[in-house]
Image 1 (cartoon, rainbow, N blue to C red):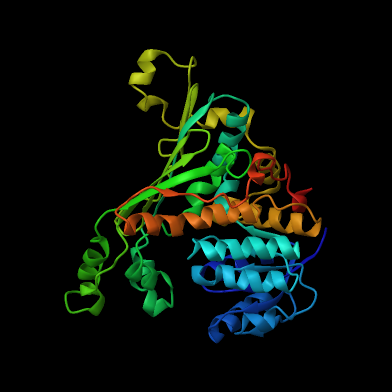
Image 2 (image 1 turned 90 degrees about the vertical axis):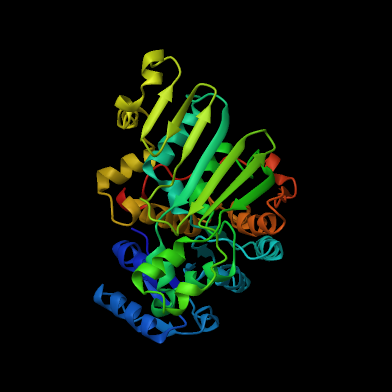
Length: 410
């Protein structure tokens, strides 16, 4: 088995989760850790030591971490605003970057990241875990085998009750509080768009050409604080700019329409709301069902409820090779196992000097949705042009591919 040496920048909620359940459970040595809060650095170092690894280099300055020799890659799990600046600094040092998900803050930042990757030729990847989901990969396989015909429409969502995380962000040092207070946009587009982009071959034969975003009023956080803290609490009377529901439409060059929804400040169950609709069939994540034209009669189509949950019968034939290997070896924790899969895939490609499955063009295309969404909402929900970050190269780029087995389990 191969050994992978990494440094990790940002060991708050997400970073410490990755550290504990992904990196320390595989052949990864974490040789350096960084966070702007010293107690988080010490906590991360303790986890590493308890896993039987040497005490890592510890720092609160990411520039110091980037001077550590011997790292195969650096993992960035900081707040969203630091993703691109730290990524660029690491790339300039010749260190491959695996970056956690989140939106960008300007188109200029997106272009700077592309320019740095192009000039340095150092790998960068936004490590979007939902693209590695079992159902998402099965649906991708079915799409590529033509089961759904020509894809016409896709939907996705980040519909997740985050009121506790947002509302107590000041106490828990979580950046989402200020993000929701100060901005109004589709702030977390990658979980929605990762699988959809792969299905539609975005940046790889197809591209987005325009975007429109609109937001509801903001009332969820006021109601939350009123219930949890009462009228006298300062945040109860703050005006949060972030709309409770943000809906974004994207048009592709090939004529498909994509709709994504952000809904994180209202009481609701978790859903990624993936829907894939084609000329011969469709998939719906929320009721876990697949409809293939000709497999079901008209009566069943009208009364579909008894067929909810029928996706299981398709796994035997269309399960991805990656998940077959993973399940034989035992699925790890971490969002149903997808955390381990996406990071294993990233590190494997770094170690073997292979092109990133989700490269800088794929990454900035997802990240830029936040910027364009904010622009659209500010301008009265008008349509805005979507840049071609590949500068025409999307026409020749190969479709998204990942490994078909898990190196750690071979």
